[in-house]
Image (cartoon, rainbow, N blue to C red):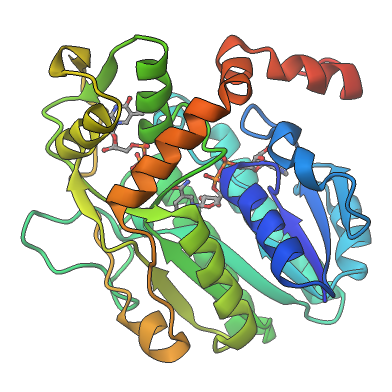
Length: 336
Ligand code: NAD
Ligand code: TYD
């Protein structure tokens, strides 16, 4: 099987590249990534010499380049996106370009080259925000995105569904909860908290900190996507969750405890505009149909993640200092 993975130099994509190379010995992987601020070839150092792996520096909005790659592929697994809500609040332009127009480019190419198999990686944020006692999201929950990020992901989901209904494109979609684990860019809550604490700095908590997220270990996510690709029903959506709903206050206290720090390391800061209160996932469908369940408890997953960040200081220190962009510039020249 020849995989084309988009956004494979980012957090989840790089873990998925590694998952496929490790678990499918007959697979080849081509990774197209534009190396935005979130893309880092340092995430893939251990596979770059693998004969079955090829990196292509490119933008998914570039139709000619995408056509060349899609032509030679069996399946497209689409991770590339602008992924940070706070950035989408500041400026949504890149979110619409990559998440909406970029997805359309890939879909058109998949259609043009004989309706290639397409798996689209999306988020639970497209379903909006839940109240404290609302039932968890299911595959039937109506779309109600509320941030520019989730609106752009919702638009991309709709396009993927439209290409199935209109052009019979053999697609599947997964919408998952908040991931965490190795190679998570330290602008998101968990890696920001861990790396700040390792630097002796405080952890910023937005507003009251009573918002609820469901936390999914990235390895569990990769396995779920693999199962959907292998045995999922074409045209269907699957929700993937970690069975780990936690308020931000509780989550950061779990991290403080693992790292032997006290509450003086917490700092309340201004809330995010339009901050979604709660996300939660009912993953019965993928469990019943494909036998997938999340295997990593939040306790164990956080301990492993703290250990990973403690043992890989150079990786995140180069990101926090901006040094990681120097490698990029040496290889590809300066970029805004
Ligand atoms: P990330 O921000 O870490 O990585 C995104 C990658 O896409 C980067 O390597 C970046 O360089 C690349 N990219 C961006 N624009 C591109 C373009 N125009 N062309 C080619 N490459 C481009 O993101 P992530 O956290 O790994 O998320 C991956 C996918 O999973 C996204 O689609 C995101 O919406 C979805 N998702 C993420 C989470 C989460 O908790 N991180 C949860 C649910 C869904
Ligand atoms: P984040 O990791 O940005 O993911 P998302 O917004 O996609 O859920 O944020 C997770 C939660 O943590 C969210 O409720 C916002 C909150 N948060 C903070 O309290 N402080 C921070 O510094 C960050 C980045 C997020």
